[in-house]
Length: 245
Ligand code: NAP
Image 1 (cartoon, helix red, strand yellow):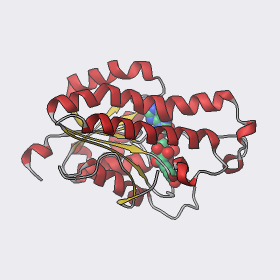
Image 2 (cartoon, helix red, strand yellow):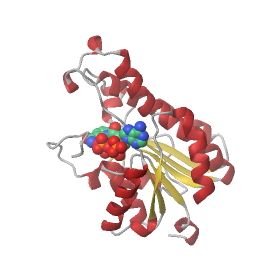
Image 3 (cartoon, protein in one colour):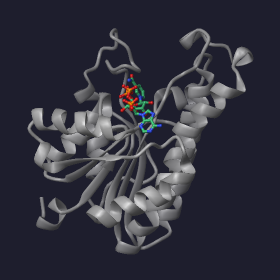
Image 4 (spheres, helix red, strand yellow):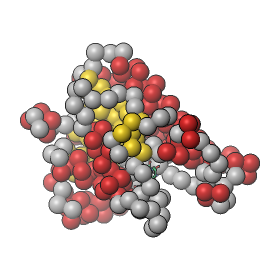
């Protein structure tokens, strides 16, 4: 790693547990300084302990960032950048899956506006707001990496029934990724914006029966967050292999 890379700050949203924790740990283990987004001061204290136990505490600073209220994000990220420095790597990992009733078997025709709205706020408006707040700075500085944690559930090419609010939100996140990547590509800056699927992962969201560990689920996101100059822009990846949208 070049010495200037070690100085880069990465922000990972929803980093106190699950895949986000492992993305933060993976980036810190690779030498990056990591801002681990958590929802409250209490969770920041607990996350600091967990990152210390994981032996990356010196590289990780928990920061309070609730992405459910997009309107508050620019000001909050401004405070965080003034306190710590410019954010060059953004991993939009935080998300919710609240489709009900029935989870996987939830019917679009029974879905409430409330579930659609809450899912949209966290899974779409939140990442849109973090990109809007941070990507212009990345372009101005000439370097940036954005990873949007999506899901195969958001693939239009494989779209089927189940989890309607979640599927719609991840399809929208994929669209945001392509639009943002196209805008970045139109500049001279080395800014790369990609989406990825972690596979089916054993977390609170994925459940106990999922075959993958959170560390495995984090691998492609860490890879995309640390792409070299010649790396991909505007793609959708699982296991570091490009997937159809
Ligand atoms: P998880 O175990 O449910 O963890 C979600 C994380 O997001 C938690 O840290 C949670 O914080 C945070 N979060 C939720 N709402 C937030 C908000 N308003 N502001 C800030 N943080 C918030 O989920 P996961 O399985 O690790 O999933 C991580 C990502 O991978 C998500 O984007 C998910 O859609 C995607 N994914 C997961 C799977 C899977 O099989 N697990 C499959 C495909 C895609 P709290 O602790 O405060 O709730």
